[in-house]
Image (cartoon, rainbow, N blue to C red; front, side, top):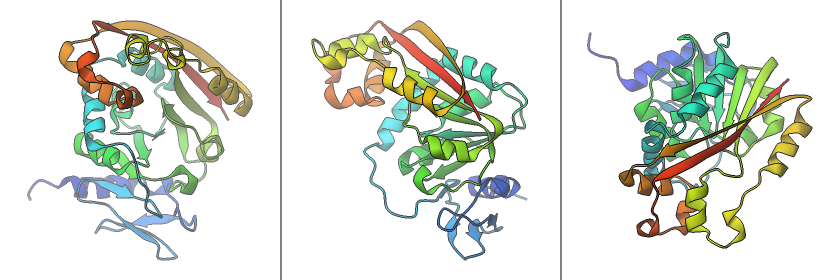
Length: 278
């Protein structure tokens, strides 16, 4: 027998974990056929693509995020810029969890690096509304389930996940609570005041955007959960010159910057890790 294709591997892995899914149209349970069709009893069906992901969007969505942005983000994350954050999040998760959902996962690098530090049996699922991000995730990371989807029309079954990750991404707290198992954890990572400050000072010099506060985001998180822990993680990382254009392209700051005007020798990573339990 020849080597199985990426699509065949994805079909098999999704079949093993079909209990996680419900139809984003009617909320019925879903099954996975050997031919890669994902369907419910009302005959709503979706197809696992040849790249190994499934698109659960029920209507067209335009995204401002491009393939180049996600490729750049992977290069930056691979450089180790967020290693300390990944270690801390993995420590918070521990080795007893079985299912993790990364919401707004992009090209999947955060989820993949965190799962590398956990037990081999953990099932990692990534969802993003940007198709280009999910295609990139499926290209690089096997033994994960990658979904194009909108949390407003979620393709996941109620109380399916032990942990939900929400890393530098918008939140949908109502859906997070629906999807978490009893006793499950939401781990939200948000920028702190000095996050990427060397870059912000050059892009937004002498403007209000040079400064940043996450106060409103943190207050809202505390309003959503009774049992909340919060820790700040801050460190500096040296930046190679060739990484600067990639770094700029992967952030919204890049929409305002000319790369040839930016000079960096180091970068500050300053994040709050918020943990809420249900």
